[in-house]
Length: 134
Image (cartoon, rainbow, N blue to C red; front, side, top):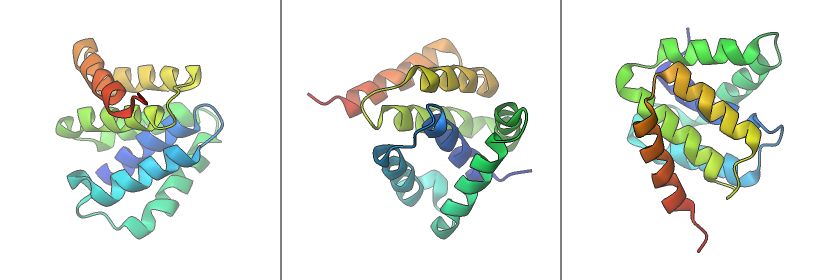
């Protein structure tokens, strides 16, 4: 079983990788989140590349995405599920364009993390406000 930190990172990695391209802005967002958010206070940031690579490797396996989503759900306490969804939304918004594949991943995350539509809409609206270019 993965840790809660791994699960949060996995949500960001699968969102970034959804369109087959992990942009510099998305990778920067992931790094910034891990270095600065309280949810990662006791996480060793030096292991971020290893955790990200483990997730990417799992995605290449048969039913890899479903496996990752199930592990994320199992590893996250209910108190961190909205946080996980918010982090994934921030990664999708980081390059100022959410590809259709990223939107599909967010939909799957909403389902697996049991995030209701109203909460999801509020999280998404907050990200739009933070990442608006002008």
